[in-house]
Image (cartoon, rainbow, N blue to C red):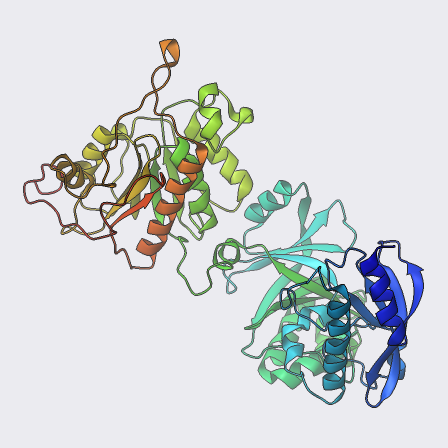
Length: 538
């Protein structure tokens, strides 16, 4: 036994805790008192032997302490949620102080809960109390006609999904190595402006009547709408119905089976008690829709959903950038991401490309589309294996040039001068990464910037960027730089695309110096178009 462990044993012994052995998880298990409501309540304390994770605390006989069936921060098995994840920095060098602090916090939380505090926390913890089988929610439009999907083969604890696009959801299930078939019962969505919280007296609801009574206590109009949906499904001869409640906090679902086929819908309308007695099964809704995936990490920020974006170049920058665009919602909600590149993926590309051996000798554009469709099956992504000069580019919301080819960049400036265009590139052998967004006729285009650079203006670094080439023979010459530089260029471009989407495109020219031996020459700014530019001013 280490000295730290021995000291914890001694400190807990003073607190009245006794060691009971090791759990199958490896935790050190103790039993002892928490001071609750002026008396001692026995609990189980589970310590991480490395003291790297906060202890779990579980009441041994919760019914002897808790008079209400639902108590904030207390699970049905007596487990106490006394600290939010990340709310405490674990001090591995003070296991005694850390353990005693956790016990003190547990006493504060439990005493507060018994005094009627933290009731508002029941809203945030609603899913914990709701429970039920897992139900995947792939719904882009809650007002659309919904379908229930039963997962096949049947997974333990998994019901299936609710969707407004069966084929899209099926692709997602297949991506996680699951199958699904359309259920024979309908699905409906009912919206409410009230956040749910569990009933402190009767919980969880086991029948339709209990469920409707609870929902009516929150929102009577929502209760009426739910009842109407059930009766509609019953009148239409459905063997059951799946309902989703769309609240400001969470989406929760229920299923009802109409087993008694001898009872007609009209008879139910005259005597609803039969419906109220039907058994209810709760479903824990887990969102997998594309909007949620894109918006979760940037709440309140616009996504690329619904935008038509053309990405020219599926090379070392374009490969990473394409994935970032998809993560930001590109190709969802009627939008489209089109990747244009005529080249193949060769072995010499593997060291710094998003794609790997599984796509070797395939066209980069097709391979990248295939890869990203697997990553996000709900996105519309297509590859175009052609020289971009032969592709119709007008009518897109945003054109992104990630080829790094200066001449092509000049051509694109002239061809697409009436639409927003972002150019991203790497300076020399990874000295810096730059991005230029032309979002209006007043803004400089890539050709304007190149002309300014040749005159010594708007440069990336104070020190000249000398050309550096590697390779020889059949392999051909190339500019050497690591994959990390490509990722930083793609990240800069993704940042600028997000700014454009949020209608905050400034600054239009952005530079990130990678080589720390160099000095930034041009701070981020908004250069104006050159009146003599042959690309954007003719």
